[in-house]
Image (cartoon, rainbow, N blue to C red; front, side, top):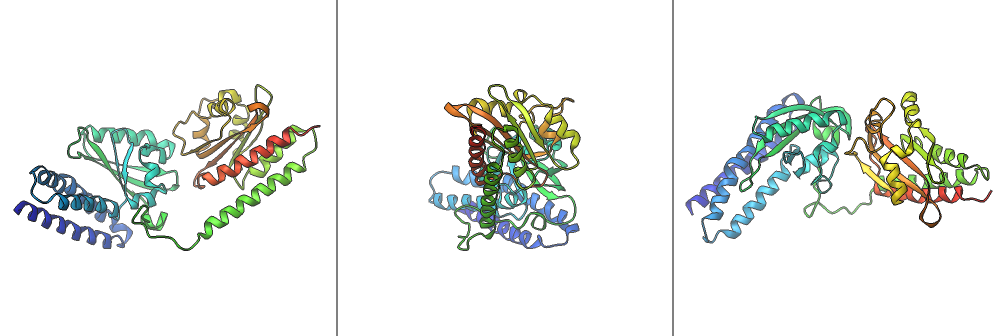
Length: 384
C-alpha cells in the first residue's frame, strides 16, 4: 500500500499543478511560451513517471486496488482532455490518435472526426510535407522539433507546432505529442474561441442555436433563388441553364463553380472563380473533365462527393503547368455533384470549391446542393 499512497500523492500534486496551468492561460501573450513549456513538462511527467508507476501497480497482482487504478486511469485521461493547451497525439505517419478539448477548439475540428485521419489534412498544403517529415524524424528518435505551420481553418494566423517523442507503455512504437500555439499575438481562445467539451461530460444545450437557424434560412433562400433562375431560362438553351445555375451558386455559396455537361463525353461549359483570378480560371476552363478524377468518379458512380480539407491534391487534376488545381486554388472544401439523367445516366457535373478561411461545406449544405442538382437536371431535360 505504500507504493499506492506514494502514487496518490504524486497524482494529487500533478492535479494541483494542472490547476495552476489552467489559471495561467490568462497571462499576457508574450509570457505564453513559458506556460507552454511548463505544460509540455507536465505531460512528459505523466508519460515517463505517472503512467509507468500506474502500470507497475496494476501488474503487482490482486491487492484490492483494481477499482482505484481504473479511477486513476480515467483521471489521467480526463487530465489530458482538460489541459488548457491544444495537444494532439499522432503516430509516425501523423495520423491522429487523440486530441484534447483545447485542440478541437483551436483547429475547429471535432476529435471524433479527426481521429484516424492525418493531422496534415488540417494544415495548408504548403506545410504538409514539412510537418510529415518532422513528425517522422521525432518518431525515429532524432530529437524534439518545432516548426511554424498554418491551419486551413485560419490561414492568416501562423501556428507554432512543437513535436516531442512519447513512448506509451506497452506499445512497440514511439508516438509524437504535438502542442499547438499561435505564433503571433493572441491566444487560442482569442483566435478560435474557448475550448468547449464534446461528449458525455459536455453541458446540455437548451437554447436553440440562432446561427443554425440563420444558416437554414440562408439555404432555403438559395434553393428559392435557384428555382427562380431556372424557371426564367429560355426553353431549349441548355448552356443558359448551367450558366444561370453557376451564377446563383457563385459567391454566395462557393468561391469556385465549375460546370461540365454533355451526353456521353462531358465538356467544360462554365467556370466562375474569385475576382482577380483570371489566369487560374482560364487554366481550369481549359481542362478536360475526363482528366479530373472527381468528375470522372461522379459520372461513374452518380453520387455526390463532399471533401473537407482534401487530402489528395490531384483529385481535380492539373492545369497546363502541371500544378494541382486544388493546391493552386487553395481549396479547403469541395462538393462534386452529378446532374442525374434518365435510367441512371449523368447529364453533367457541378463542382464547387471553397478556399481560404471560408467555412467548409456542411452536410446540410451538401443535402441542399443535392436538391438543387436535381432541379438543374430536370430543367436540362425540359422539352424544347
